[in-house]
Structure formats: structure tokens, C-alpha cells
Image (cartoon, rainbow, N blue to C red):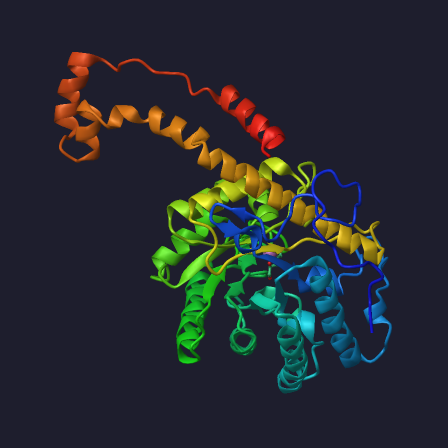
Length: 438
Ligand code: XUL
Ligand code: CO
């Protein structure tokens, strides 16, 4: 059975006028020593692609998917698996990401829910075997159900903490069974609505306790993937503890978890925290925790998580720039945590959206590689800090002077001469590379 009329998508090059083709994503093309497919490691998000129906707070579903046309919830789950793999095959997407709740409907009890998950995961394994498509990461949804009203690991209710732990255990087992390269923790309800009723110190200690349990269990079941935390500043809670990369790093350091976790950086979460996507990736890179990426974009006019498919070349270029500077992905990848707009309700729109996202990142990769190869920004930066290679600068870096020596130096030399930061020139060069890179 086929769920999509759209045929398989191929690379046709930048001159093609066929919207159902890749203009820039040429999976076999070598960029900086690896194929584009290896550099990008694109992944489909199961939730936005298979289960999102276009509902918003003001209106009902607009997307009536062919795989949803059955009342039997398990039958629907199996249809979704087959539809997912057909879509990924046709779009040449080599990975997928999933929450437990995306793949199998919750049942009345945890036991039954877990049995349902096992049934669906078996079918996913068969499809993975058939297609060679792999799992980038799995996670649990410990935020959607009403039991998580006050949080999961940070809930004031110890029974809910236990329930969340049980969900994590199962989701880690499933991710391991599917050979997932990563396991993600996004603390959907780990935050607060008001400090009037919240013991933040206790909640954060508990969150750390839960993550330590996960580290121990990963070791116990020999899960070799990366454990990732995905920062987000707000929504659904007013304040999420994992606000941004800096907050997560501070948390990991405080609880001695730094060697066990890396970060999954999402573009729209970065901008909600008033940072650029590049800023968050940069902070991860310089701290050695750049794990994986949720590739999407927000709307600069809107203050919520719109999860749009990424089409902004500046953002994808500068994101790939940081990723390449970090040496490229090892276990991470680019997961399209993105959904089509409510008005883009036809099946074809899913294809067009993924093509747009993949092409925008492929182009960003090429431009970033050209910028790096030509040393455009790195040479400029090197030159900018060259006063630290000689004389007093060198002595500062080597730790050979203190305040007393520097005072003596300043009394004698003053503060020297500053040079322009050349921001506009660099922005112009970036434009030129985006337009001209072959
Ligand atoms: C929510 C979000 C999640 C995580 C996984 O904003 O990004 O989908 O990526 O739970
Ligand atoms: Co995400």
C-alpha cells in the first residue's frame, strides 16, 4: 500500500524548475571530506510528520491523512509506520526521531502501553531492515498527559516522578532496540508557572536525581548512544529550567553530569531565548557539548514556538559553520523538528517542506565549507587577536603577569590603539559567499 502519490525525490541541480526535486542537496557530493548525506544526517520527526493534524488553539484539524483513516488505534499506528518509511525513502531521509507517544497510543495502564509500544517497534525494526533507515534518537513524552501537570522529574508528586522514570526506562530500551544514536531529554514541563508555590532548589535536585538514574540505566543496558538535553526557555511552562545552553551547562556542572550529557540545540528554542541559533551552537562547541540539532526556525514577529521548516540561508550557513568547526557530526544530526503550516494541509506539502529544509541546509553546508576553506572569518579572527601573540599579550596568556606588572605596563604604554571590527565588511562577504558559492 502506498500513502503518497508523490514520486521519489532526486537531485536535479540548481537550474531545475521542478519543485519536487533537490536543487542543492546532492547526497553523494563530497563536502569537506564527507558526503553531504554524512555531513547533514537528516532526520524526520515522527510527531510533526505523522501525528500533527493542523490543530491550533483556535481551530480543529485541517490535515486528514490517508494513514489515519481507521478507527482502530493500533491499526492507525501500524499505518503510520509504513507511511513514515515511505516518506523517508522517497525523500532520501536516512534517520528518524520519535517520542514513545508518537508511535503507539497510550493505553489505560503503563503495562498495556508498553505492550503496544513493543508491537509497533517490532514493525519499525522490520521497516528499518528493509530500507536501511536508522534511528537518530528516541525520547519519552513526559509532558503531554495530565499527570504531568506539575512536571515529571520536577513534579511535587513523587508518584508522578516514578511514573516519568518508568516511561524513560522503557523509551531508553526501545531506543536501544532500534539502534538509536542518541537519547533525548526535553523537559517539557520541567519548570514553573509561579515561584509562589515552587521549591526550585528541591525540584532541580530531583531533576538531577532522575538524570543520574538514566545515566546508570544506560550503562546497565549498554546503551552506547549520546544522552542529550534539549534546552528551551519557555512554553509550555512560563520558565523552563533548561532555559538555554548556558543554563543547561551550569546545571550539568553543578550536578557532576557534564561528562554524561551533550546538548540537542533547536533553532526556534534559541530564538525564544533571545539568542541566535549560531550563538547556542557556538556555546556548545566551545564547551565540547554540541551533540545534535533540531533543525527548524521561528517567526521573528511571534513569541512562541512555531516550528517552521528552515528556509533562512543565513541561519543554516552559520549553523553549519559551527558544526563544521566542531569537526562535523559524530552521532548527532539534523532533525527536522518542524511542521507544515496549518494551511499547507496536502500530503504534497510534506514533501515540499522537507525538500525546502534539506536544500536550505545543504546550501548552508556548501557556503559554510567555502567560508572555512578560504579562511574568511577564521583568518580575520586570528588577526584580530594577534596582540596576544607577542609582548605583553603573550605574557597575559601564559600567566606570567599579574595586576602589579600590568599596572606598570599601562603606566608606561597607555592603552594602545584599537582597530575596526569591520562588521559591515564581514556581513558583505557573507552575502557574497551565500550568493556566489558554486
Ligand atoms: C518541543 C520540542 C520537542 C523535543 C522532543 O518544543 O522541541 O519536540 O524536540 O521532545
Ligand atoms: Co525539539
